[in-house]
Length: 245
Image (cartoon, rainbow, N blue to C red; front, side, top):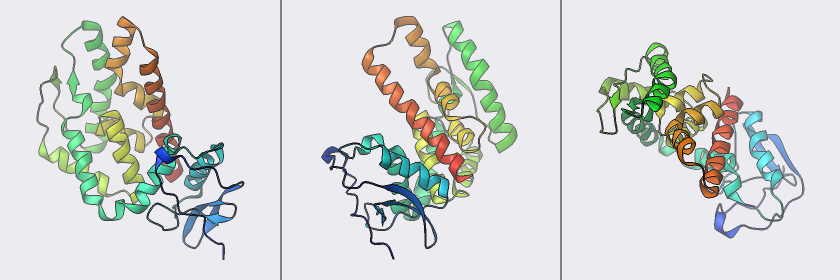
């Protein structure tokens, strides 16, 4: 039996030195894991990281392989998400689903701009079809609002979001929660999870307002870097869900 790799402390600020040479995705007793020099990677809780699909293990393994010199967890979103799913979701499924429903209660896609006319047009053209999809395919009825004042959503739709979330396994549920927070939209998160949108498209829809403002006023370097990091996270989530399919 393989010995286990040293447990990851999962403390990004410490940036421990890379202590391994070879990385691989490998079968374990009841799933798949990541091995570092033939030793199984452990989660921060001290258990072997056990993933349900080989493709998911390969996604995590690629992040460990990409580390140079030190281990920077800030550049390892799939690893962080896998650790969260493995260590925390089992006892927090109901709370996680409730948080996704809370996001749905103030879903970004329900707040259409009153002005300027071009931004209103983009919302109608790009967000409208997603609301139609949610209604048609997921039986989620959302109320549109003009402007930023909060508009309560039907409780039946919020309850339905929780049902859809709880139907997922821990790894898909963790991804859905991360996506809902990233996009400010449970609708976009569900569309990504179900393959209706890819990561790039979902991220673009989540920042229509920001993109419009950038067209008017330009982009500063700090904001551009942050956008790039968030886009990379959206692309990772796309790969995450496809690996679970």
